[in-house]
Length: 175
Ligand code: CUA
Image (cartoon, rainbow, N blue to C red; front, side, top):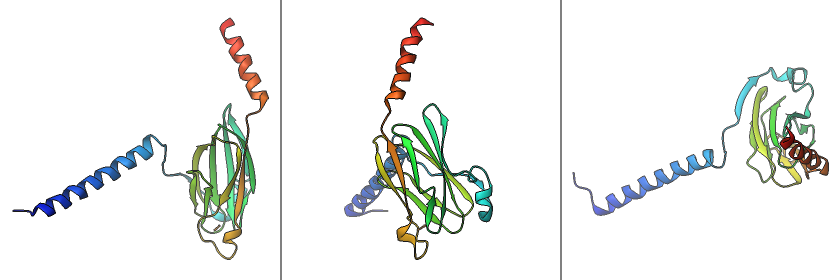
């Protein structure tokens, strides 16, 4: 079978685009850390507020430099509406919806979750700059959809934490 030179050219371009897309996918997942949110558990949607950890939504510290944000989406609010985390910490969002499908996107970051009623979704992020980040619902969820916002307040590193790390640095060589 003979192919015209232009056909061969187009085939080469097509294969080139496929390879480039494949490499971009690998780069995004390996080097940039993009990955699909994990599906970790399933709850009967009406029971969400009675089941741990959603019976106590909010921020909790899970390690020296890690925090968990437990958040519930409902028409038309995030509960809690505002969370505070320190800059540079490993922050894991654990979230679900109590009623219908909502979205959770932290403005200007790669944190983007789809919240399906009763399905627990989890993903982690590090905020490298302090500031106030808007949480936006990005799935149309009814008349109040465009009012459905929350806030992540990323607080600057405190002098107290740098003091404690200084103490550890001084103490270590003695042991
Ligand atoms: Cu919730 Cu749109």
